[in-house]
Length: 481
Image (cartoon, one colour):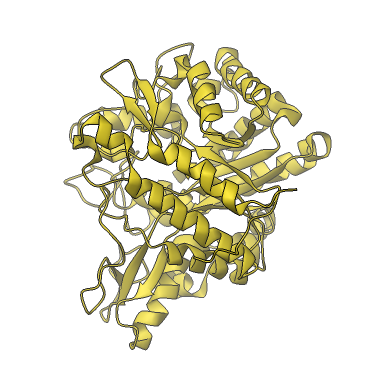
């Protein structure tokens, strides 16, 4: 990292969360179940058998969360709405739950009163279960797109100019692959009959990814045509992707596989938005299993980002496979590894098997995205780390999370280098996460928060060392006006 890199004076930074991971109150004030409520009830799906039933109890602790954001010095807060809290049954002909909508409207007002800018994600994986039961949810393009568009319009109309930054979908890769290929996330569909009685891993994930893109494009069209002129906001989608380094840097096949790895995760969604088509590598491998674009659908999707939402955590080594691709493969026919051919680790271990910190990879991926998509405005909407064994530490040591603090110093520094030295137009950063929360299939055994949450002690929140370090780090990099 350099000592001369800076970030612009209007750089927006803060923290991120997701509705199902923090809110709790799953049966209160008219909210109906999401696919995650249902998925959590299936034995063996969540590591500790838990759910988001109570989580951080944020539904009842609005004041606590606002106070926490202020204490951390946050300029912004990215959070998601629970679709099934606002339209419990989800559909365009189903009733709106005003109590649910009012909860979020008041919260946004509280954020403004505290001087904190809201960034709202419409969909962070928690589809109303009624839509999944009714017509297959995200597998049904016509119904899903129409219902999501209606939901988006209801929300845009209600919030008006109080919200200037909208994200349609969070990490569609996860919804598609983990929900409809590996089956480890809701709704848990997969070809593996030991995990699910239903699903086709070779096809469904590609259909779902396609349908999410069309729904994104349709919602953006509604915002731009009906609300943007009045409210003056902006809208985009958040995509997740890790950096890839070749397992053998002397092997051209491994070098090529690195690019393919990013194409199969990021460009699957970004290429249709920025280039109007799927990546050639995906078309080549998947053939007819990858949906084709109708002129009407690609017209909705192409050019549908006002900013690029980037979720990023780590890097991997990538090794090309020499065999024919497995029909269920979603990676680009390659191995994803944590060590290179000489046994060098890409980064230190964390509590998450998939997450090895490698800050220079963050800078490289920012540059890769900037080059491929012609310098878009980039908002980093998630970045953070778990800490190996954190849950087992005594409280005093847990609060002294130097490992996470250093992660943020390194990653924010790498981002400043990308802005200053590489010319990447990165304008915002949201740390994941404001607080420990329900970590999906890992339950409560993994912590990502800069704030400790005592799940057994009335969900009490205690900021960790990293909560303070993030603000201090940005203070060093952001130019003073």
